[in-house]
Every structure is written in C-alpha cells, then in structure tokens.
Length: 96
Image (cartoon, rainbow, N blue to C red; front, side, top):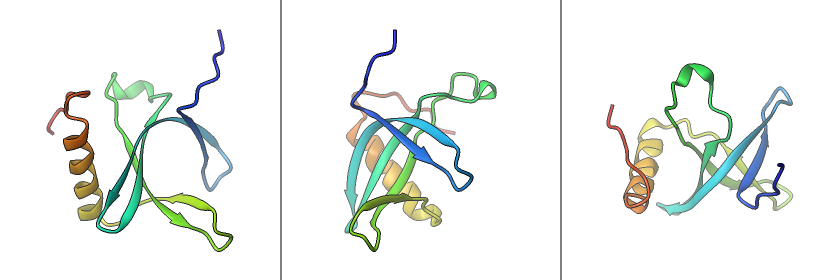
C-alpha cells in the first residue's frame, strides 16, 4: 500500500541522491527559521535509533526557501534543545 503523505519531504544532496524525510516541526529561534526532519529510512547500523536532522531555512536569490546545513555546533545544539522542549510530551530523548 503506497499512501500519499503530506508530511514527507524529499531532499536532493550535492551528488543528486534523493532522500525522504518526515517533517516534524519548524522552529523560529534567534531571528532564523529551522526545519526539523526525521529520515524515513534509517541506516541498518543505527539499531532503531532515530536521529532528527535540523536544517536552517534560507531564502535563495530567486526568493525560494532552501534548506542548508548548520556548521555551528552551538547553534545546532541550541535549536535541538528548543525542539526537545517543544516536543517533550511527544518524544522520549536519550541523553548521550
């Protein structure tokens, strides 16, 4: 059964590879917007550990939104903490 889902996002990496993600949330934090995604297919070696992907939303020269990786670890951690606070009732988090 192949259902159409509204919460799926397909991203294309720099090699042209497509990956599907489940949309979880959009977060406004410190004047920027971020999207939180969950990979639909986890790597087999992940042993059922679900890890979210957080990307920054930026406007490209054509006025379209695009998602970019966050290079600053402090920024990434702060956005993840905000996500955890917002979603604490829906998800359990393992502290590593």
